Length: 290
Image 1 (cartoon, rainbow, N blue to C red):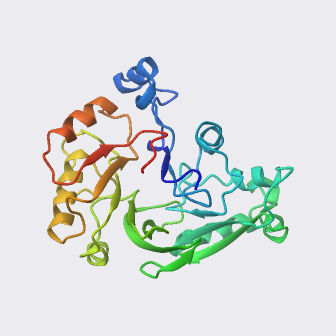
Image 2 (image 1 turned 180 degrees about the horizontal axis):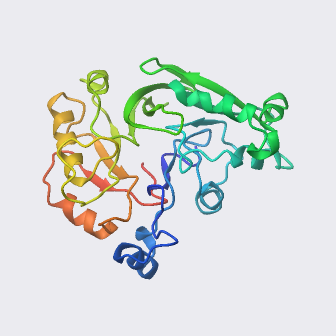
C-alpha cells in the first residue's frame, strides 16, 4: 500500500528552521538542509489514514505523497500545527476526488471545536455545515480507552498529558495495524498519566513513536508535563520497559522536535550513547518505517 508508515513532518509548532528565528539550530538547518529541516508534525499510517493534518499539509503532500486516497484523519488535539481547518475547504476545491467524506476523529472536548466552527461564520466563510451537508467532510467523536474500527485497524485513543485549544487532553493513539503490529503514537504529551501507563501495561509494542519536543534542553525535570525532552524520554522508555510495553523488538522513533537546543545530529549522537535495549531512531521528514 502506498504511503505506508511515513513521517510527513517531525517538528513542533514553529518548524525548523523557524521562519523568524536566527538561532544556531535554525541557521544550521538552513545551511545543512536534509534531515535538519522539519515540517509540522504529521504521520501517514497508510494511503487511507493519517494522524494530524496540520499547517504544512500542502507542502507535505507535494513532497511525500498526495491526499487523493486519504479518508481518515486521527486528530491528536486542536492546536493549529496539528489541525488546520483550511484543509477541509481545500478538499472542497478539488475538481475530482473520491465521493466518500474525509472523516475527522476528535477525542473528548476536542470534538467541541466542530460546534465552534459551525457557529462562527468567519471560519472558512461559514461553510463548515455546508461542507458536512455536501459530503466533503464528516466528524466523529472517539472516547479515551475505547477501541474503534477504522479502515481495517483497531484504534484506541489514550489520554495524553497535554492540552489543546478547547481545553481537551491530547489523544495519543494505540493502533493495531492491518498486519497485526501494534503502534503507539505518543505526542503531544509530557510524562504519561497513570491511566495511560496502565492501559499500555504488557501491550508489547512493535513501534513506539514518541515526542521529544525539547531535545537536549536541560533542567525540565525527570517527569515534565506538557512535553518531553531527550532526558525524560529515556526515563519514560525505562518505565515502559519495566512494565513490558517496550522490549528489544520494539522500534522507537522520536518526533515533534523543536529548535531550542538540538540539531538532528546532536540528538542522534545522544541517543546512540544510551545503550537502551530497543533501537531508537531520531525521525526525519520523509522517513518510512518498513
